[in-house]
Image (cartoon, rainbow, N blue to C red):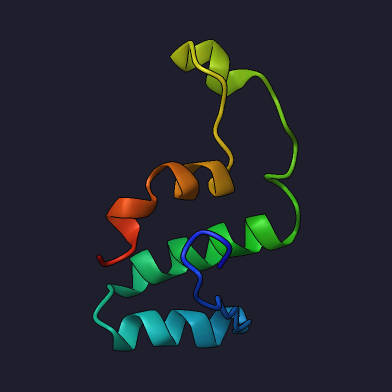
Length: 79
C-alpha cells in the first residue's frame, strides 16, 4: 500500500476453502492443491531463511518484494 497508495487486505482461508475457491475460479484441482501447498510452506516459515543462492545463480543480489514493487510502480498502478 505504500507503493500504490491503496490499502492491501489479506484474508486467510483454510487450505480446503482456498483450494475450493481456486477450483471455482477455473483452476484444475491439482493446480489448486499445488498453490495451497505453497501457501502452507510459506505460512509455516519454510521459506523464511535468507541464503546467497539468488546472487550466486544470477550474479545479482536479491530484490525484496517492496523493492520490486517500488521499481515497477508505473507498470502496476494505472495512470
